[in-house]
Image (tube, rainbow, N blue to C red; front, side):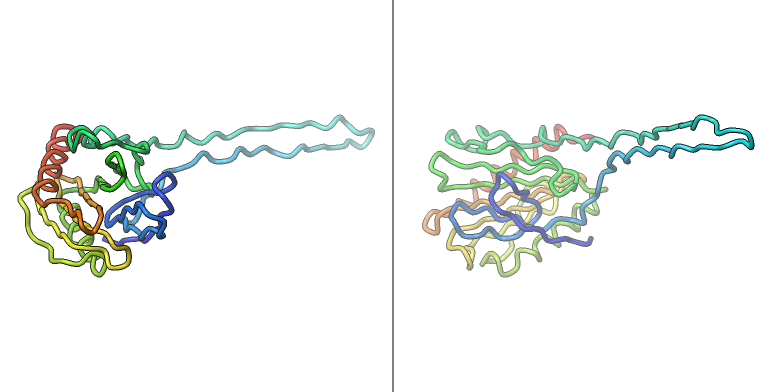
Length: 225
């Protein structure tokens, strides 16, 4: 699976995807990674024929003009996967969603959502990518783990969340904060949950696993076949 790198400048204008990092300070956010994004067709521009004129041997005849408009089919509408997202209330009582979900980030089928607590000291980025099949989703887990190399200290550990569950907990070397990342798949969905908090307030692994299992259940109940 080929991956492309994009940059983020704040959640309001950004997408978080596989390997995303969410920051709550003024430092420039790190770049997420996404599978090679697809694209959706756009309407073609219209075309018209030019006017033509002809003359006879005796006199000029009025010019005749003809035109035609070719209209392309409407663009394919991407699927809205926002119903697959966990609810803020399922995470904690004070969790909110400061921005609407990002639909099909970077034209990759899926959805991303940022959750924050009341004082923005804890942030959770949830990204769900819908790939071709479970095999592709499993491959995405391996790629995402590689993309986090050097960005989070610690060691990946297997966890019992979905399929291919794996988690790492540590700190971010270039932006002092505690970071926990949980990756798993559910069918053809590749799920990335990143938990960011103050260095002295790491997210308990049990909480990350609980959130992951709730997110897994939501996807399992709502993912189109």
